[in-house]
Image (cartoon, rainbow, N blue to C red; front, side, top):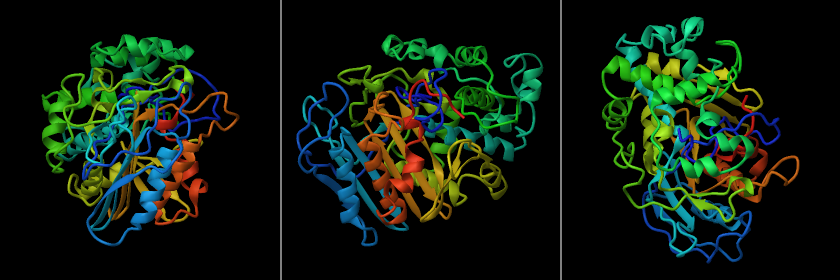
Length: 452
């Protein structure tokens, strides 16, 4: 996934969960669209954890019509940067009305500002794309959701396990297979960044990632409980490759990305992001001091589950196309939105590569989040596809593990407020509404935190 590329890929961060095995966050880089931001108040890389910056942060925004509260969106986005986030960019839609903004720095050394059209690694949001590809094949009767993995990948998941785990269990994370991240990045087990550095230009094969995942302790019996594992989507990508005769990335590029009309979304073929982008800084909870740029990275470790590059505007377009029936027929979309509960996260229900999040003040939203080393992304859309928010950040695992029982950082509260404003049109709920959600997203998850 990238997973994330540098952040840990387990399900929504569990700051209060017990420590178990290290997980890496999926690359969550977002590509921004629209006009460029003017430089925000000068900031420099913190000596330890990112510190709050002083002075107002300037925000650029793209006005399309008059429906959204642009002043509040400007203010709340700038507050994320002021709370210590290096750079943040977002796109918000309400029907045909759209706002796009950016605040802060793309490069803390040169002072280059983030801009709203920048490309970004979006990490586990890639899983939604892969699930769409699988469901397209379900519609063609080439894949059966309740068929065993062994039907499509004989011998890959050995023995009785391959006959008990179904395709559906992979897509909704109820297979019980462990996550491959600790095997691919073993130093994360002790919260050491060495393997992140060692793997910058290492190429992983999908089967190698599967072997790492199968070597980890099982998280439960097949079908018993949701337990987020990136290994599930490596297997899903292999199934898609097997039934289509095309590499999963090639298939998804032709039949999902192109079908959705996305112009700035792609699987990178090299360690480099092609278009304008921010540097992506990883802090690893203070273990990397100052935070290090991982925007150049071989994303084979995230493959069909977390390696996509996109923009905030493209992500909104993708989820709008998906939820309004442009990518899947009604029967397959219903399957995608058939959910299981996510333990420990109020209002969270996971479908097939897509989750529902219920917000007390404004209802249900569908989407996903993702993390990569140095990049985080959130994307949520209302059920009718009308109200949308996508957001990217370029500093990851900025929280301090010694910050207290909650591990909450001022950046988290500021993100909560902005996302609540974007989705609900109000800020009064603040951290009390989105906070319960965002503090548990994978982009904020500790690298070694246990998943559900």
